[in-house]
Amino acid sequence: MTVIDILFRVDEICKKYDKYDPEKQREANAFLDDAFARLYSLVEADIEKALAVRFLFSYPFLFLFSFQTLIFQINYWNKMQKSDKVSTEKNRAAAVALSAEIRRIKARLMEEVPKLQKLAKKKVKGLSKEDHETRFDMVLALPDRIKAIPDGSTAAASESGGWGTSSSNKKIKFDSSEERFGSDFYQQTEESDQFRQEYEMRKMKQDEGLDVISEGLDTLKNIALDMNEEIDRQVPLMDEIETKVDKTTSDIRKNNVRLKKTITQIRSSRNFCIDIILLCIILGIAFYLYNALK
Amino acid sequence: MSGSDPGKLISKADNLTTLSLTRWSADWESATRLYEQAANGFRVSKDYENAKLAFEKASKGREMLSSPWDAAKSMESAAALAKELRNWTEVIDFYRKASELYMQCDRPQFASDSLAKAARAVEDALPSDAIKLYSDACVLLEDDRKEQMALDLYHAVTNIYVKLEKYTDAVAFLLKLGLAADKCNATNSQCKAYLSAVIVYLYAHDLKQAEKCYNDCSQIDAFLRSDQNRFAGKLLSAYKEGDVEEIKRVAQSRSITNLDSVVNIFYHLHCCFWTCMCLSYNNVKDSIIKLARKLPTGDVAAFKTNAAIGEGEALDENDLK
Image (cartoon, rainbow over all chains, first blue to last red; front, side, top):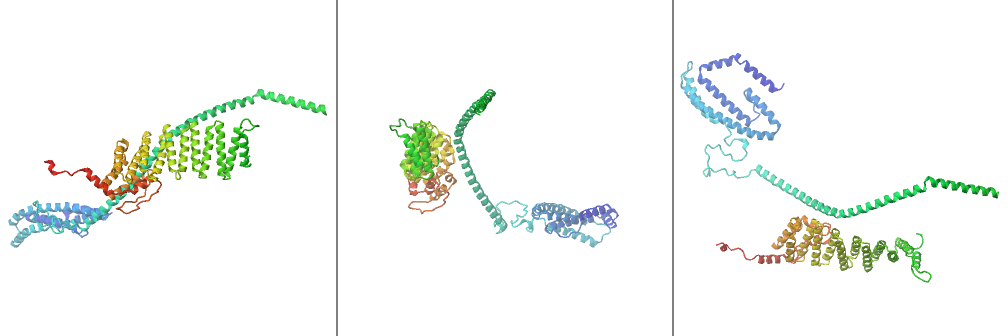
């Protein structure tokens, strides 16, 4: 079982048996009567969460408080391990998304503040006067705390490089002559300069490669056209050769047939018998002469 | 037989052929056979003079025996031996005779072939004769409607003319080449021929003629659509502007190196204002590429001023009013 699995299971079990947790019950019971305290604790929790998430992106390996954020951190760390570049990209997009989320939370919390103020003014049983005043102060401090949550709209956002962040202006301005952008607004950073140079180099190399290819293709085209012409030149010669060879083969065939006929005629059985008979006669005559002379 | 002295064979053959009181008719058959044997014997022993004579006689014998084909073959052998002996006039005579005999056999290709061989042999020594031989060979082929074979011969003639620096004649032949190529649909050769013509004119400092030639050739569809056309256009416009660098750059392009084996060039400027530069020296085989690489010759600036005058006055704003 992995750590994450263990954590999840523990979390689930805790949630399940939350009702048996005496401390939590006491808190819940306590807050039942006190609407202000309940709401305030919720607001606090939200602020903490927003800060934790914000922290997470600035300092990914920071140890955090709750199990949820811890799990979130572990998951996040796993993802970060996969590929730094991609995660930086994702980080930026995710950072932007989270910043938007945080801003939304902040806006919601700001809405809650007047409610809290009203509740703080109400008198609650079992609460001393000092507690009452501290509550009021806490409520007053809340808006500042909410505003202090960084949400990526300031120049402190580390991922945005040197682009001279355009602040999240509530009003869109054209020809902002009043606002002087920093002197380094139009400056190319090292990064973008390098990128541009690399791009130019690659383009040049590609151009050179393409030139070489085009020269090769030109040569090939020329060779192909010349070959074409040469073959066209050879075609009528081949045709002539073909007719001549055809004629010669037919002549040879004819001659072969005649030769065969002649040979069979010579070797025919009739002639053969005649030859043998004549041979015998000659031998007979020779024998007779031999006997006569002996 | 082969062991016997070729000299003896010759004398024996001569005896057979000379008429005398005892001999009323010459025995050409055996004489020819003997002559051929003797000739082979002489050739093996590298006695080219006697071999040549023997072949001549053998050829005559064959003629008498009414076999012009064999006669022509013997004549060609005789001519080849004459070439070894560097006897150019004899070479020409023998090859001409051989071609006549081939024509008797009704084989114009072989006839033109032997004329071409003759021309190739005497190219260096007697270029004008070579040209004549080549043209005759081309005529023979064209009569037989075998223009494709003639293309090589035209290339050869152009080469000789360029060597002799007779550029107008060279161009004339290039255009004839183009015509022959057109007849047999060899568009690549045709376009190359026209491009070569333009280059030769430019080399001869004759921009007007070059332009005229270019305009004439542009009438032909095949040329109009070709790469060579674009290249020629670029070259001419570079000349008109008098831009030496542009000319050099354009002349360096692939179109020139691909201009057939006829046209290999190495590049140097030779005019009064610019210094010589050898840029590339690939496989120098023949002349026209040499020429193209030598461009621009002459006073390019002069062309520029002439062109400027020719264009007339500049447009005046007031004309619009």
